[in-house]
Length: 363
Ligand SMILES: CSC[C@H]1O[C@H](OP(=O)(O)O)[C@H](O)[C@@H]1O
Image 1 (cartoon, rainbow, N blue to C red):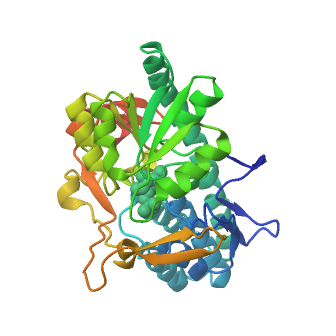
Image 2 (cartoon, rainbow, N blue to C red; image 1 turned 90 degrees about the vertical axis):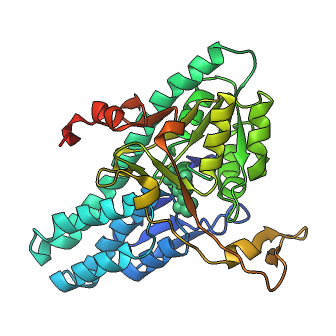
């Protein structure tokens, strides 16, 4: 999407054809900094330390990490080692495993001499496919916003949690794609942006995205959503996801489950937007089977912000000596989800709904 009038993706190949450029999302919204990945370990660190984040973007970054690894050593042993090392970076987003398994399957069937070019070609193809998929998600989600707009006066008020925007993908985003499509089509929308503690992906990233695209929005604390829904201030919820099970359970940023409960209690439609590589067809019970990443306690005890004189600082916001826990995701049962918005259309968050859109997955 555009940043001060110039189009960006969050990841792209340098003009030299091998180094990988990324927007360092740990610096946003206070600084716009591009950094370069030159080794497979650079790619692993970028994922692990969340310079890039978001399920689809994590997958594509890992794919480019495999391409960088093949430049280092195209042999079988390094191929296997890079696959394992990149896989260990973060446990929850299924796109990481999908992308790495796809790369490994394609590369190990080739002679080493052909692996570098093939790896870069496939990683770039994954990025381009993600952009097209998210555009289609936007088209299908747009219909939901148009329906809501016909039923009311004034802007359609949409609540979103975390960042499932173009910064979490290769462009458009997933949950934000319908919003961008509606805004660009002239439909009045307003977005309630959950700040999304502890890393504030909403207040830092979604707010920055929407501001740059001119979409009206208001940042709210995570615990405000239920109150807004009770008072009729939310017409729709759109969120992203890091893994959807074959039965429609949705794993997403911590706090999503609580929003879904509030939406159910207040009759607010709650939609989850996802590309098909985010579906994990191997698991059924999300609560029992999806590994939930536990991140550092310092993400809870400290926050990053800008002082009034423009210095980026970290500050402690929890009483010294207190323990902190930091589960990074939770699982929303499919029964709380109004619909899954995919590149093939909108369906119910159920096994039958998913197989209706993806019949090739039937056992
Ligand atoms: C389009 S996937 C976005 C998804 O990823 C985020 O997690 P993180 O920022 O930790 O990578 C969050 O769960 C978003 O909904």
